[in-house]
Structure formats: structure tokens, C-alpha cells
Length: 109
Image (cartoon, rainbow, N blue to C red):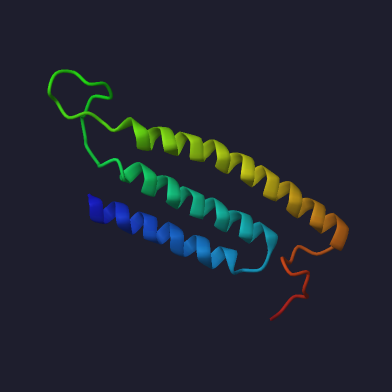
């Protein structure tokens, strides 16, 4: 299970970096979103993967760690805010510059 989790995080990071290097604002926004999802999964998996563990301590059973869950919830909220800010910034730059390239360059073949 840990190998699958690590592979999912690696694929998300790889796709995110590839999209960020695309040079267009929409792909940069998608890449940043994928990177934030990868970080969220990494934080969530850092609390150990357990199935059928109760969220609250009952007796001597192992419980789920609430700290990674709280960190992921906070990261999701911050990620939505940053994505909205970047989208508005990209739309403003498109309106001002007339291009959606990150470096305001021309189309390259």
C-alpha cells in the first residue's frame, strides 16, 4: 500500500512539474494544482496508512493520527485560495498583455 501511495505522489509531482514548464498560464495553474494535491497526499500518508482505525481513542486500539488530517484540511483551504488568486492574476495579465504566455513570449513550434 505504501508503494502505491508513493507512486501516486511521484506521478502527481511529475505531471505537475511538466505542466508548470509548459509556459502557458492555464497549464501553470493546472501544474500548481497537481503539485498541491501531491503535497496533500504526502501529508496525509505521513500519518500512517491504517484501515478500520477509529478516529478517537477507544481503549488500547491504535487510532488515526489527527495532525496530518488537520494539516491537509488547512492545505486544501490555502490551495483553493492560492488557485483563485493565480487564476485572477492570469486573467488580468491576459487582459493587459494580450497573451497567455508566462514570459509574454510568442508561440513556438
